[in-house]
Amino acid sequence: MPETPDPAPVPVPVPNRAVRAAHTARTVTVYQAYAPHLGLPAARDGRFPPAWKRERMTWVKPSFLWMMYRCGWATKADQETVLAVEITREGFDHALRRACLSHYEPGTHADRASWQRALRGAPARVQWDPERDLHLNPLPYRSLQLGLSGPASRAYADEWTLSIRDVTPLAREIHGLLRAGNADAARALLPGETPYPSPPLPHLGA
Image 1 (tube, rainbow, N blue to C red):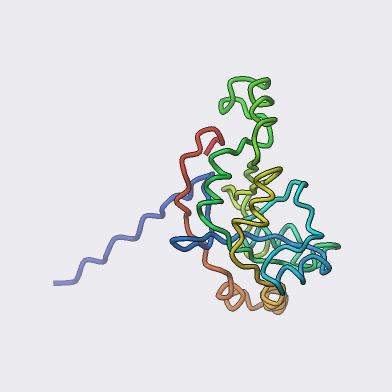
Image 2 (spheres, rainbow, N blue to C red):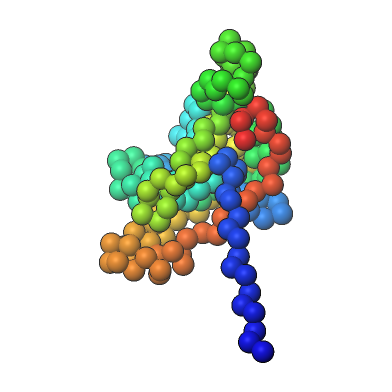
């Protein structure tokens, strides 16, 4: 009697807004790109140098490919050094719990005035931008950008950060393979990013 073929797997829909990242039980990895005079000392010393302005807002991205889209595979001016920053999950979750959307969104906020009040008091901001595929084309679901300011920015630099790696060579290697038409080899080098069990984020529209 012929065997009955297994049913085709049903694709699991990707949530429109969800945090995906490389993470461990204790840490989560985010990406930033800097000019070499900031990025190289940070990677060498494993911490951000004094020249890194702690009073300014800084944006971190858990998506490697979104970072590649933003920095053009480490080719854009002042973004030639790509850093993988491993931070504590405690710090990351702390920022998410206190974040506000960076723009007004009907349905998430009661009205524009309440959003503006929340934004003024929030030490962190969230943007949901289209995730990117290997060729940096937009995908139909969103990737997190987390903006940190004031106490959150200082804590990120001086308390939450556990290690900083220069992943510019990796970015250039993947980009080179893509240009050579070897997408499978390029894809195999991508950092593994899986759904991150972040705290509930109803105020962020997630």
